[in-house]
Image (tube, rainbow, N blue to C red; front, top):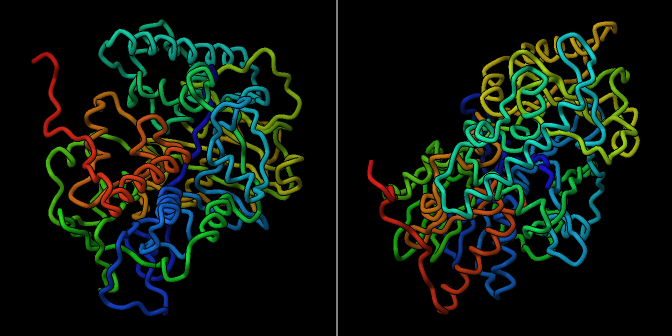
Length: 523
């Protein structure tokens, strides 16, 4: 079993003129809409879950729907941007898991192939150089040991699940099996194996849920797709696959872009969304695909307030932040592999069977865990050769920290790390620099969801449950695939199937929920 990295990104994006907390909030296009219109089904959010929900309604013979998106294009957390004469992905970037033999196929991989997306395999384990504060230092053996530690962690979590034992934090699980990192190299290795996947630390994550989550995507023996990680390098943008899919069925009158939702009224008889321009749409049913982060931050008001069980569930699940920081230089001076790593507390080992040919990644081990640890070169054959582009990834609390800094301060910090990695090279100033502030973006409030140790199955059922005729779908509502694009796909499809039955009068039921989540044994 191999852990592979989850590079997911948020759902609605920003354009336009109105500014809130430093972000431009989209305003309505000059195109006019009736002030108050009606439809059978309203789909809120134009990311993967929203587009697939709309497609599913269409396939079920329901074309009386409207898809509403705050940005000026579909794609949500698939967020491409021009950078240094190329297009890079600030948000979701990878297809995680493809297909093994005749086993289940990842639907994102299927759509990428259908729409001709240009991709390249990312070799997380066989293409790595390691560094610390003294420069290049070979601790790949430590990384390999960390990969094995993660496998043991998954195995032990499976044992606990099979025995109906209480969940532990992932940190406690590692500690129980005797795999606590003791130095900067071990911390960096564990980081690459865990935090780089879940965008939060082992202490912030469920031991059992994270193990299940990894297996259901990457382990064919557990029903997963494969252990492949496929990077989109398509210069049309990763978003192309979902935008092209939308074009295959969506009519202009079924789509409203640049439409920001202010509040949503829900009841047992219908749903009404009111927008920032004062217009509204009333519907018999609605599917809300807003990110967990948006729901947690009250960026959209729901009237009436959610029931207590729903509020508790939203408050209890967590939203991770995954930040890619891009730098472009006049010419390449770094490792000739895809990735470089800085030593931090949590990373995975590289398989002994894999030969290092061209380095894609660099791992940097700093005395401060999570400080600019994972570096990836795009200036490579098969990627963006001669581009001079490298990016570094930070996650979780460190992502939130850098969002409070200016771009100049973040650039200075990243440059200081590169100078530590290459002490004998005079490194020029970057010609271009960018990153996205996902945590403070009011259309996302983070990158993707994570399952914390205090969050139980009943909480998740309550998070997924409908209130009245308002239903919810997205990566966060997927028990098996939370945090992944394919989780958003499956939930958009499945919830739209439920709503279609309601529209057709064919067995409309409310989803499972619990009025209270109680301890099995009182304190």
